[in-house]
Image (cartoon, rainbow, N blue to C red; front, top):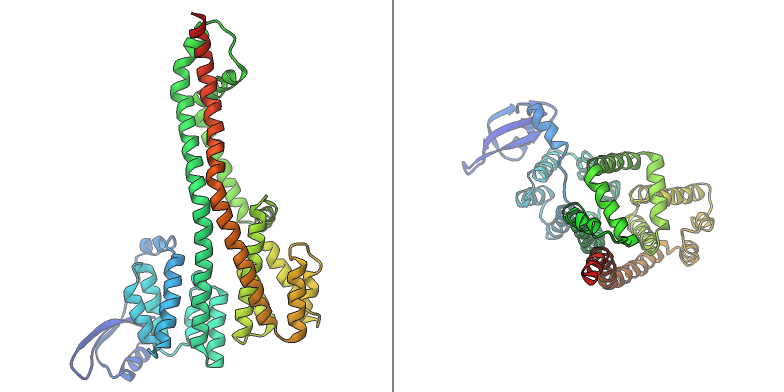
Length: 401
């Protein structure tokens, strides 16, 4: 339960806030243990149902989570107590939703709940990787190192996602703009020229006939096409949420030209980095493999990692599972095998992650450089076809006069 309290400290300063506890007596006991004199402590009223439903659609941005991880690691390294650090970070959040969550976690920790268990109440925000690395730090007494690992890891992942998003946003925006302009021309400009072209009596080129046919189709059946596209989009989205849909689209990602290789390198780098951090954090190899499989972000690679986990469980090396698939390059399999034999698996995985991380950066930089001239050529061809189909008949009419 959650209780609203009003209390004063030894210097007569008034404190107000909320605290979570199973009973009112335990809430009062926690407050008194912090040298507070209770003025009132009452159960808070339930939140309106309509407001609870709205919160279903709220989410925490990746950037906010990255900043939270880094700032928490800095404060903890500066020997600031965990509760104090959490309260300070809650005040800095621009998102009220995330602020409430951090305050809730700090209240749980202050009430005696271990940090990892308090985080586990929010599995949609804090991943199994995040929670288990915190748990390993608590067990080993190296929470500071775990927080630093998390901060570094979160920043790397956010940086990679930002690079990919930036590389795809510009061509996506330009392509969408071209489609909008083309549709407007087909619906608003072409119909005004059709009567002129038909009155000329000349035979229209194939491209012009095709453009006129497409214009008529959009004018007469545009609403139906839009409905079909929306229905198809919703159907694909719902299918992508199913197990078979995720498997299909994750397999498709790996088969895409150019981008398929980029995705493969991202997943290898992510798996290597996650597993390396978890092993260094002191987690058993089977648990580390399970967590890495859960957060890798691709069903195909998740199945590969789980197969490796089964090989390890029966006493075989992890690399034996990777030898049976084409998704893992032989070089990576050989390096993992060497790491297993020498007892330096976490170090080898760190090297693999760094190598493929640089590979992804290089590919994204190359794509970012090539996308602009490719777009210019594509748009030039599109505009040439569209204008040529319109101007050629008009030119022929003018020449025949």
